[in-house]
Length: 211
Image 1 (cartoon, rainbow, N blue to C red):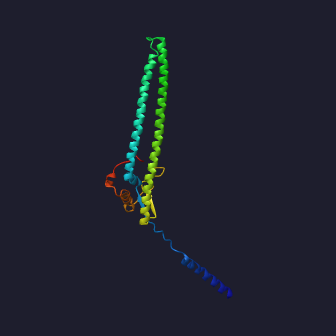
Image 2: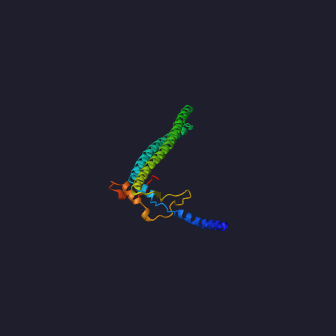
Image 3: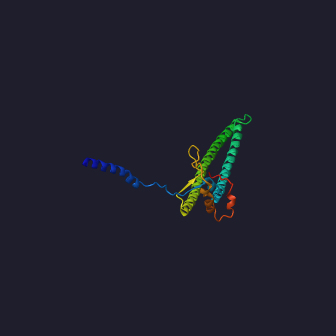
């Protein structure tokens, strides 16, 4: 009899255990996240400071090219002078003494020519490096300003994440395959970036060399 009572008690306890466990189990609730996307390509291209930076770059490039052209013209002048002297040094119509004199002058002119060629080559290489550094610096500064505006807006509006829908992976696959238009805050960010600019609307549909 006692054995029967014990078995019955164990069975009841076993049946009640899942019920207790079920009561303790909590239903998973996904976090309430607020997500937005921006088009960084559009923001960068239509930011008014990008246009100003483009103008600065074109001016700097124009100065570099003008100086390189000047050195190039000096090189061409030396090359012509060298050719005249070199031809004269081989002219049998003049005396041996005169040919020797022309050979010496041609050698000196050739040395000037080589120095000018080296000067031009070094100038182009140095200014190319300078230009690339200048572009990289301006690019970084502009992006930081855009990022700061996005962060400020995201905090103000309570967004948890802001993704760049123009971003691509190493395989050129879009990072964001699809996003509803209601999630795109690019227009709002662009207004804030270009606030106070009378020609802000004119920034649209214009490309930039700062890429």
